[in-house]
Image (cartoon, rainbow, N blue to C red):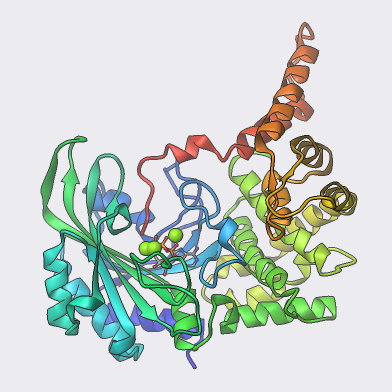
Length: 469
Ligand code: ATP
Ligand code: MG
Ligand code: MG
Ligand code: MG
């Protein structure tokens, strides 16, 4: 069986052997890019290399990049625990060509790695290409020997990547594996594509154009390659398990949680164990990269992740703070590949302990209110937005935590009433400052900032140069 650490090194060594420089992961907080919430793809640290603004001493690189997709354009927070493949924190394995090799070599390298080194069976694999990319379709036919029905042409932006409104862009080709009828889902492009039967595990981006203006697109003189493979998804495939949560690393984290709690997962509780394991990873990696829970921006995303995990700990019957007691297991599993985790171990533990201790003061009471106020509701009903606001304002429940708590029962939150309540509070706060001449206190500012957070960080949404792969 290939464990994640082995898969990571197989990937990096394969590309090193093929003339790629192994470059360390960049931090989760992108340097020099305040508009991007978190590093969400391997290419982020190379953006300026692709545009030619920055030069590196190599033209081919390979990385295992820490990624968080829990805020901004790519937000998988709501998927975690509900699909077999989405995590808020994951490692993206990638190979990059900066104006060196292009499409043919990229497909050849990918094909050799997955069929030889990883030993995947050809008859389980299929690919997508952008509908007009005859070149890629022809290369897959030639290199992999696929028949036409295994090369699916996709006309949507899912298969056309762009760095932003202008800049490098191009078609992409994704590799999927069919894991069999026992898992629900259909091939890419079909109505059931959101299922987990056909699992996407690698995206190859062919940067071959430059978008000069909205209307004008020209070929790049030296096209580039950017790819991204989810490490946890590859582990899931190679270990023959149905979801990323059943891979070696996640089993260890779930075992550690079970022994801290004194009982393991069952059908009813397994989702909570999974959410806790995932959120432990994203929280720990974010703290080790310098993010601390707060009421604004990145820190608020971290707080939302932490508190969601803490609600699940409460659901599992934790009588005292749980999260900080799991950190050692994560450090044991991932500390060698990411020494920053070892360095920050105490800080991570302390941060989690403090946050959970604080939140637990209001969590139990808040959950009781949530239960009481939703007890008469049924599937399709809406939860009172004013109560959601009280939970947020008095009990520290981020809106998405309340939504998450009600989701499994098919109940949504009345968001416009929530926003109105927020607005009224803001007006009240404004009125009470009037004439005081004092600088606003934290007590007033923080809820305002938190409100900006609760509206999904529009500032980041407008980000134009966000990496996809
Ligand atoms: P999906 O369609 O499953 O959401 P994606 O198309 O958004 O994936 P890409 O942006 O193409 O993903 O990222 C490249 C690769 O990174 C994916 O093929 C997948 O292997 C991995 N990946 C993306 N998002 C996640 C996630 N939330 N958790 C784990 N792995 C991921
Ligand atoms: Mg996605
Ligand atoms: Mg996809
Ligand atoms: Mg993709």
